[in-house]
Image (cartoon, rainbow, N blue to C red; front, side, top):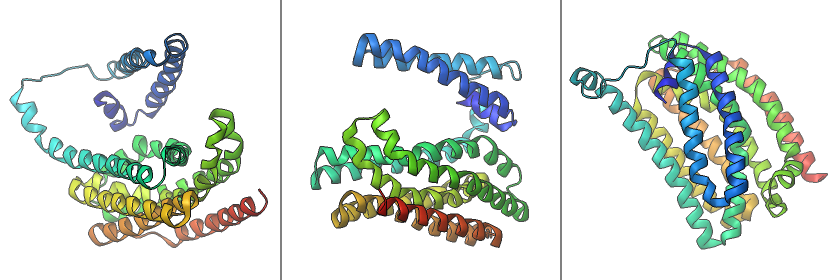
Length: 311
């Protein structure tokens, strides 16, 4: 993780991309034989060897640039790293709250419904985040380091976030539409046919992911300023909203209600993050970003309506 952060920080994105490609290929080559011959017992050796190879591949890319040096007993290193540790704690707590909200939703759906409902919900949640997550990962690799480098200049950070949001919209929207359209074919192909029940829920939730393309670049503003408390607060608010809305959505409308609730939670998250970043960092979206989103949202809504009436 540290070596990968170094490559991202010095903008060696080609090396990051090659590392990701090779580890994906090697992970597949290693995992399939273990699962095929050992079944469930092959999970541990597969994960261990995949992780080991990831480290080796990454060191091959990073050590020629920066020698691998550690000083675990150095007081100076520990002293210099205290601020980083404090910042990291807020980030870790935000991640724990996110995982906790998912667990609470699963527990509530088991109590209200049954195991099948939780399985369909989990599949839908995974499918909803699968494709967008690939493009959001690019923000971690490129956008966040650039934003952090100019974190004190309000004009530059506003421009960077607006540019990133517009590019994300132009890239994500067509992919999300095509992905939503292809889900009824993809799910039976790669999963059990029973999980096709997750498709309508996922398609409905996809509108929320379109909104998230605007939220995601904004959410990095607290991180780029080192304000882990602000980041933790905005993530905590989303987790509470997500949990409450999804449970309420299932009670009111079943699995379709869950899809609508996930989309609504992401819309509410955009409002919360926009208010926080606007008040604290003087951030504003340009009219061009709003126009781009409006056009994409209209086309997306028309497609959703067509899929519903002509399925």
